[in-house]
Image (cartoon, rainbow, N blue to C red; front, side, top):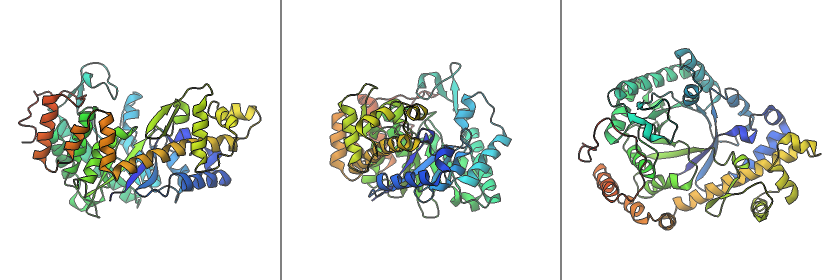
Length: 421
């Protein structure tokens, strides 16, 4: 059965890289101990951490004291953040990022080109209406992304680094994703291709709805690349809910992913104390800053696994104030830190446990999708084994309109008949 890798991002919320934590042996040991008790030991999950090599360039080095208590250190390229900040991605900047990844990470995301044209001045992640797939230039962008991966590998080789690059694939349909993969791969020397650690399926040119999630999950199964273990490592970007993982879990169960390893990253749980969220009993619970019974429920749930080290009253206070305010009230930073870590890691533990429960049970997946009123649609995914199978499944969704879509428009009229030609 498959093993999944949970990759926590947004680690600044957890103070993992804060010198007050990462450079104090007693606090490092506390964090390592909590990792061991709370997020390790799952039957089908390992635990890793991610940082942004542009905005959080020092984090990789500061993660080193936690080695052994996290499986891998992942480093995002920071390309999206660079563009968002209005900066220009230069070759010099890319090489600086690659060097950071080489020195501090086990996994390094590549710089990818985005094959979309904007119909307005800007477009955020979920604003698919302002984007059109750039069918005229996407092949050239795929080649340029391949050149980025080639140079990334060269820098890693220069530093004798174990870091493995992950290539980001973009597209608007099956054919364009597969063409992108082919064009990218052709830019990497044959002798270096096995050193590509895995792929991530970008959504910028496809869309962000549940139907698009299923499309990406299926198309990933058809990518012909293999690593030295004759596997394809698939990384799923930005998973904040169990729903996002459904097609991947189904394809693990029906055999389509027998050659695929899966990791996924999430910031949802690491920032939960700031956003007022806690995952337990199959769902994310929203809470506010006023004390009520939810705090007692969280407290008791966490206490089943570890000693929080605080009373319920102090637990509530710590979750609703910064570390300096807590110290101003006479508390210690260690108390504040332990409460925050136990809260975040308990939410992660609960999420991992729920994902595992569904990974090993078709019945649980169908029960969950039944609550979404989509049991029929997901049940039929179990029969998808080939491109032709998926074409028929997708055709049913377009004709019935039952699964929500948030698709990026193509510059050509969509053609179901030609989708898998």
